[in-house]
Amino acid sequence: MIEIKELVVKYKSSKGEVYAVDGLNLEIDSGLIFGLVGESGSGKTTLGLSLLRILPPTAIIESGNVLISGTDVTKLKESEMRKWRGKKISMVFQGAMNSLNPLMTVEEQVAEPLIIHENMDKDQALLRAKENLENVGLGENILKRYPHELSGGMKQRVVIAMAIIEHPSLLIADEPTTALDVVTQHRIMKLFRRLKDEFGVTIILISHDLPIVAEVADKVAIMYGGKMSEVGDAKEVVTQSKHPYTQGLIRSIPDPRSTKVIRGISGEPVSLMNPPKGCRFYDRCSQRRDLCKTYDYKPAILENRHLVYCNLFEERMA
Ligand SMILES: Nc1ncnc2c1ncn2[C@@H]1O[C@H](COP(=O)(O)OP(=O)(O)O)[C@@H](O)[C@H]1O
Ligand code: SF4
Ligand SMILES: [Mg+2]
Image (cartoon, rainbow, N blue to C red; front, side, top):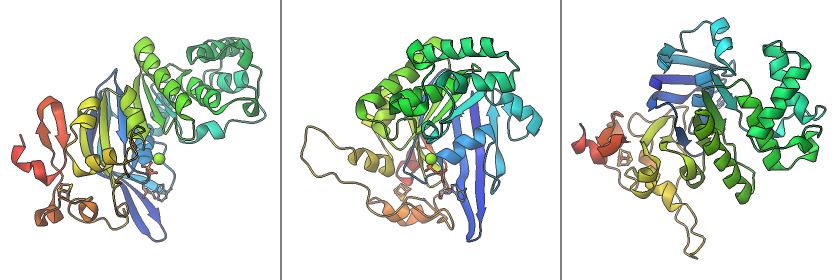
């Protein structure tokens, strides 16, 4: 189980401080596919990188805790944290499929972490690479190929094979389907479901694309402006969304059977440089009230551990 408590992560820049994750609370049960969804710039990647503590040098975890199976990773020494990366927690980085080494064959790239991190001899590592590539649906014919000889979907599978080679119990996949065609997106989602079912990996699926995540996720958390908006059972959040931001996201999904004009969310994403004190969604919310200017981000807890961070539900707070 992962418990994120009051996490604050900021970037320092010449223009000021950006609070990319700002007082965020979240619980993620083991053995699930957990979708983390929100528009670009909402802090999803920063949250993912914080779990592995591989933030860029300009970022700091200012406060809060991240407990993974009871251990607070914000408190671990860097030498301890290094033992966790790859083995306990692993990540498929945003855009990683485009940064495969063009000079290495698929089998060499996948085997490399085993040779470097686990001092495995080359033949054994290549064998493990082959097994792992099979696990992500790639056969022997791929082993000696170079990245430029692969389709986008194949490259993404290679990257996933690399991420799971040390058998992590938690896999964070950041925008793993972006830039892939729709059919390939569905196939990659099926692969995540298989990894969860066959290997029991907990998967945090980060994406701006709610429908694709909802296809496989057990639970979803909708993030806006460095904070949570709504968390719950994936199907429930999609079919019975309560938060005005989630409702806006759902209205923005095109319906292939309809020619109706899509009503997206008007306005610009909130700036995280000087974010407003109250609800982050205030400027764009069609249901805002005056009291939302001082909203303090305690969620309303509905049935089924469905959490809604919005004043409209305050009266139902547990
Ligand atoms: N290296 C960085 N330096 C300064 N600001 C950054 C950096 N990386 C991200 N940010 C800012 O942090 C916020 C959250 O970014 P990010 O975590 O990448 O969001 P997402 O993954 O949801 O698109 C954005 O406002 C972004 O501009
Ligand atoms: S708290 Fe207010 S401004 Fe924020 S989403 Fe709810 S109704 Fe809209
Ligand atoms: Mg991102």
